[in-house]
Structures are given as structure tokens and as C-alpha cells.
Image 1 (cartoon, rainbow over the protein chains, first blue to last red):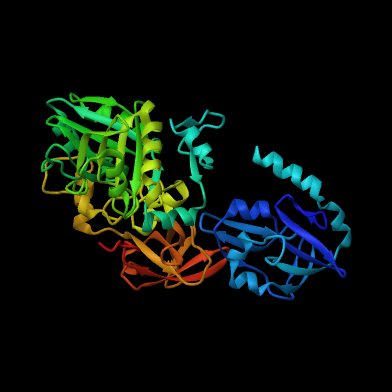
Image 2: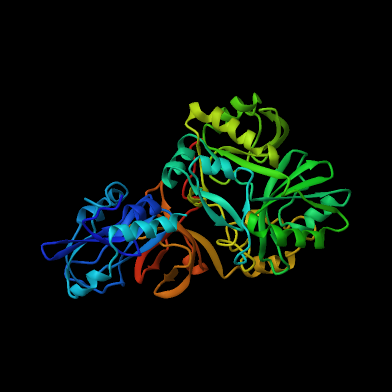
Length: 128
Length: 367
């Protein structure tokens, strides 16, 4: 269920390495839990974010949830399509509905992230 | 809710699980927050019909020759004009004019009144009523009664199909007993918490699954869906209805909330009357208003409201309105900022969101 080509956080974000950068989104588990997502608040290109700190927010009809950065660094790309059409998060959270691309400032943080197996176990524990 | 205390389950718990309901704790109960999805359920109620389990609500009976006097003393509204089978909405206030609960009271027999109260306040309501209703007889029926709500433009068609009863003549806030659904005797009231036409259907607790199943079956051709607490909240907020414990409580008065119409100063003495009379004479300092916000960040319960740059109040309820496709909410603001069209600023995650005071309700059904 959770792609093995990326890492995960306990706060239900995913992070995928590509060309020395990291693409970030929320997991299908988080999207399903939030459901009816109506608004996504993301940082601007150039913003510096710190691992574990809130860098944005997701509003569903029911509740608001902060987005936590999996790694520290600078935001180099923001997905305008997901800001314009946040409902995409309910359809393709692991693909087209990514949030931001970052340049890591502390590459050693990568090893702190969960692999897909560990994340699936975490989600399994939350579901029961 | 005491940590570790067991959550109560409705007689429909298994039916909710089978229907894919996601169960959450609510006012000491384990109830479904949603099934297929909040917005889908919301839209179904606005356009077709939805079925809610509201068995967590309490039912308290006041009866005997002293019942009328007791009810009149306990509530701010006036039940004297009610014929048997009629009801009304009312606050129940403390001596300071604060709201202990908001409830619906039906006159169910000549000397008998049935109060439908909130789940979270049931225990304290019962204690308060027992203290102030004597010598009238007070009985808590909550554990014996299950309550369903069938809401939406197709509700009457569904209930007629399930019961064979002609309901066209049943007026809002009127109640009929002895209707049969699948051989189960139910009481049907034309009431609800959604802003749509609909019914609240009371049965014996053990018989509730049969009634639920019969309504799901009868509703199938009408596109009926089960509806959870999530959509119940967005529906009631669009309809401008108060949520007890959030929009009103013991620190707020019905005259500050848009409930002045439920306070009848031309009836006999009632608890809270002197305080409310003083408020009426001197005017209240703040009012509960509805607001619409710009953008898509949603002001929610607890967000700070500012007016003219000053701290003005707090959001009591806020959500994204599925019908209006924008953020809406309610909150208390000083009277000077309460006029329709007044500009407000609401703090959401550290940023000010522009909003303005609008008329309640946000949504009104087309007749």
C-alpha cells in the first residue's frame, strides 16, 4: 500500500529523493483520514523549513491539520495544482498531489525517516 | 469524559460498523463520525434524505398534576399554548440566565411533558430538573429509548413507505405516537437539526435496529444514506442552529445568542427571569453572530475574532460550508461589531482572515 521508493514520518508525510532534492507529500492513510480536503496552505518558494516543524496546513471540512517537514532545507518548488485543486489529495496523494520539493540542508536527517514497512506497521497500529 | 471510563454504545453500534461507520468518542458515547464521507452525506441530506442515529440524546419525562407548573418554571419558553402532541424548542436557564441546556419539549399527554435533551448534559439536566420540578414526577427514559433522525426533502416519502402512515398533515414540532414501522411502534415528530424537512423517530431501545433497517430499505429508491456526526455538525451550522457546549453554555444567555424568541417574559415566573429581564432592559454587551470568511482557511472553534483592530471575541463554531463552498462560522462579538456587514478579522494559524457578519441562517431550504 505504501510505495517502497520513499521514506515516511510519524506525522504521515512522505519524502522521495530525486536528483539530490526531496519531494514531499502526505500519505494515502492521512488523506483518507482527513477526507473532504478543501484547502492546502503551503510555504513560498525560498522558504526555509526545519525538520519536524509545521510548514503548512491542510483543512478538511472536519478539521485542520498541520503539515510537518520530514527534513530541513529550502523550498524550491511548490505544487500550485494542489493549492488550486486540493481535492486531488483525496485521489492521488502519493503522486500528482505532492506538496513541495526541497533542497536538504542536513542530509543526515534522511536516516531518521521510516521505511515503508515501518510506516505500514505504524499505521496498522493506529488503525486497531 | 473521565479517562478510562467505558464509552456507551447505541443499540445500532453493530449496524454502524457494518455500514462502514468510523466510530469516535462523543459526549461519553461511541458514535459514527462518518460513513461514506462527510460532504457526500451532507449533500445527500440537502438533496435527498439521510438517516442519523441520535440515540445518545436523553429523554426525560415530567408528569402528574404539577407537571405544567414545573415545566414552566424550568424553561424560558412557554408550553401553555401546546396541545397534546405539540412541542417547542427552548433553553433551560440557571438563575443567572445562563443556559443549562437547550432542548425540545413535547406535551405527550394532558399532564405529561417529554424533554429531549443533549447527551453531554443529560446527567446534570436530570439532577437540576429533579431538584426544581418537585412535586411533579420526573422519570429518565434515556436508557429505554432509541432515537433516529430521518432528514431531507425525501424524508416524508421514505417514512410513509416504511410505515404506511400519512404524514403530510403532521406540522413542524408536532408528534404522532403509535406509528408502526416493521411491526415496531414508534413516535414520530416533525423535528430535526439540519434545516431540512424531516422527522425524529423514537422507539424502544431494543427495537431500534429493526426500525433502522426498515428505513434503510425504504430509503434505497430515494438515495438514502446513513449520516454521521461530522455532517450533522455542518448541516446544523449552515442552518444557524446552536450546538450546546460550543455556541451556548452556562456562561451565555439566550438574549446574547439569537434565541430571544424563546424567552417569554409574558408568562409566569421561571428560573433565570430576573437576570434575563435585567439584560433585556440594559441591553446585552455582546451578541452571537454568523460570519462568512474570505479565502479557504477555516476559522474554527476557539479562533480569536478582532473588530476594528481590537480583540472582540472567539469563534464558537466554524467549518467549511459544503452548500456555500466557503468558510462560515459563529462567534460572540461586542454589540458595536454585530451589525450585518460589519467587518471582522479572525486569527487562523497566526494570520488574519477577513470576515464579515452575515444573517443567520447561512442556508435556508427552498420550500
